[in-house]
Length: 367
Image (cartoon, rainbow, N blue to C red; front, top):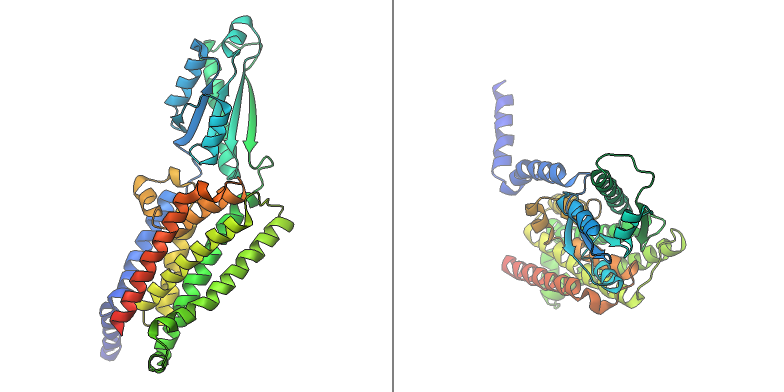
């Protein structure tokens, strides 16, 4: 029995002496609990919206106030015309727009059927369907309040229009998201495992004494996965267009440029992981669990980022997949040109430079 207890004590000491493993065992469940607890929600709150009031009467102002008081929406823009409204959608500033017709107030007074139009950004079909129902509910509440709960012979006619995805196909949303997830896992995980395998098998020292500079050895490990990832991008685009009927409205060159930026950032992240790990198991655990969970939960792939608590929204900014998914949707679905997504491109380029610099510096220090 004493020997059995001694073996248990030995295993505990092994775990306690390895701070990285201990951190994974203790911190990972807490991180997962926080992310799943706050990120996974079907409710949508503070969805950014715009109001184009062509009536500017008492009745229209009362309807706008009804939307402003709701926790479902956050009024961020009051465009002057439909062109400014469409521009706000293209820039991703709003998810919904309420357009009040010029005759809205007179229709109320004369007993006609008042009309409003609701425009939704349907690049995320589930979110668009939810916010449109919220808007209809608020309009009904407004009508009931105005008429003091008296049943009226008419109702406000709400014309709902889904932009970019009229049929509300789920593929419009998950194809760009899955593209980001696959590229992140292929580039980061396989690159880190490939480099760590050489260290674990003891062949890295043999490579380092060769005439080739160490930096070229690292790049030679990453370039094949760069080519494979680029081939995956082309395959995903072909399958999504011909099989899933997902339109490619924007430029193919812009899509490939975005993909290359993201692939470089993912490869640099894999190189950084390989420089801080010494076993394939640890590299696979960090790149698989540590990258897949944040990419799925905090990139906007499954749940809208604006519904998350502020700390998680801030953390999501350091997830490269977030900026890639936002930009690739704008190009593929909305058809925006490359200069319209310069901010996302700049962020991905900056992340790539920082990660490459950190990984190469870490590798040199280990040498």
